Every structure is written in structure tokens, then in C-alpha cells.
Image (cartoon, rainbow, N blue to C red):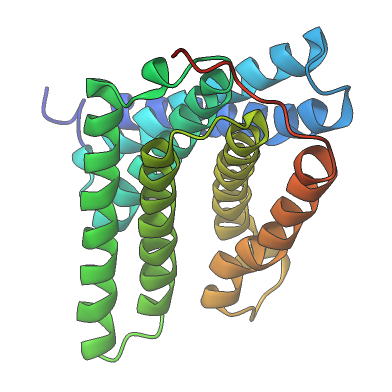
Length: 235
């Protein structure tokens, strides 16, 4: 029975296979959502396929990280799950009045877990840098991004934004960031084989370096260049 749940056992290997399959689905679903008309049926369906796949990727990574202890994998699983979940919830908030945009228990719980994960990543970074590990820079980058996202969500909710564009901007930011995490995982697995000698730090940070400007471009194209869409605020 112990072999069944070991890192090389049937359960872990089955989860790994399903994890890779779900990641592949997410990898191709996101470009479809970006290519079709925004708000269309095709966009929403591709988005839900992407979100569902990302949810499974995060949960399966979480389970595997527990079965085969890897703190970094565990924290990245939290990172991906947070982005996917809040990406969907941010979009829904643009249709609600101020009272309904107040954070719920689930929002507090998810943000708290993400904040704890960010602290964990920064602690791993500090510990690694103290030991002279160059890869610890990657932990620090993801930790800083995590704190930025949690703080951004808290600030947006506190301001109770009435401009739908602000919530749409957060939706794009988080869904694209989740996609960047998917591409990063793909790069981490394959770039070493395809490009021998490439730096491990470059492999992990290149998708982020390319993806962040893309996020700003998409936000400008689909959000900031359009007129404000004011949400009804109950008096």
C-alpha cells in the first residue's frame, strides 16, 4: 500500500499524467480565448475550459507536492490557483453594486493563503540567497509578485471601484498571470532539453519577462482605451 502512494507509485504517476494533460489543455485554451471576440460565447467557453484546467493543475500540483515534499512546487500551486480563482471572481464583480463587491469569507481565505504563500516564497528566497543559491532569486520574484497581487485586490475592494474597466483590468491581469505560470511550468520541463546550457533562472523568469508587457498591452487595448462603464451603486 505504501508503494501505491510513494512518489514513484501509481497514484503519484497517475496524478502527474493528468496534471500534464490539464496543463496542455490550459496552454492551448488561453490563446483561443484571446483570439475570439471578447464576451462572446466562444470566449466564455474557452475561458471556462482554461479556468477548469488551471484549477486541476493547481490542485494536482498541491497533492503531488504533499506526496513528494517540494516547498516551491507547493507554493507555486497556491500561486496558480489564486490567480485562476480571483481572475474569474474579478470579472463577476464588474456587474455588482458596491455592497455586493465587498469581500466574502472565501475571498478573505484565499487572499490569506496567498499572502502566506508569498511570505513563504520570500523566506525561501532569503534562505537560499544566504546559502549562496542563485536560483533563490526566482523565489523572491514570485514572492514579490504574489504580494503585489494580494495588495492590488485588497486595494480595489477597499476603494469599491464603480468603473467596470477596473475590474476587467484585474480579470485580464490575473488570467494572463495564471497563463504565464502555465508557460513557465512548460518551459521549466522542456527548455533544458531543447536548449542545452540555458540558465535555469532564465528558464523560470523569461515567460514572466515576456508576459508582463503583454498584460499591459492587453489592458490598454481592451480596457483603458475604452470609455468608462459605470456600475450602478445602490444609495
